[in-house]
Length: 203
Image (spheres, rainbow, N blue to C red):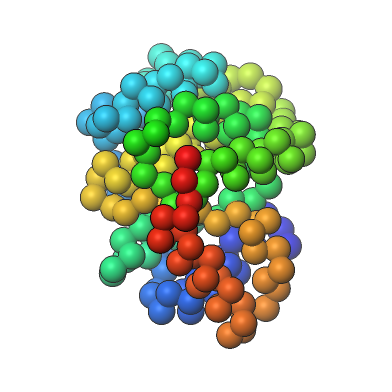
């Protein structure tokens, strides 16, 4: 499947598993393309350290035109969380560095130790993915990869500071055996989600 197709497929199964419609075109006022203290609250110093650790250009970041970011999906109702499906390109050396900055108080629905293992196993491939792509605030080769890791932190820190539950992250390796949208796949995915929501994910 092309990048993005797998994410949409898993989202459809997740809708069935949770019995909740996904919103895939939602927008949050606090979910913008640069970090601000008013949005990040207690995580502001952490995101600043992450940005510096990724060698971002702060002047460029704070000067660029404001735009709203998108999430893969949002599940409302009793769930009230953003859903993110992490494909291989999210498991880069840059992402590995960001996870080392996460404070112990961070509320997550995924295991950072597991995510670090996936980064170690996949970072060479992830680092090569669109390596020549740069961004305004990460203006160097590999800059787009650094920006992706930086913005993944937004999805982990911002929701709980702005009234949502922790982001639910599922990665492509956890659901590699799910190839059909049927009752068995829905059952497997529901079990995986329940494990994450019941606190079996940890730093």
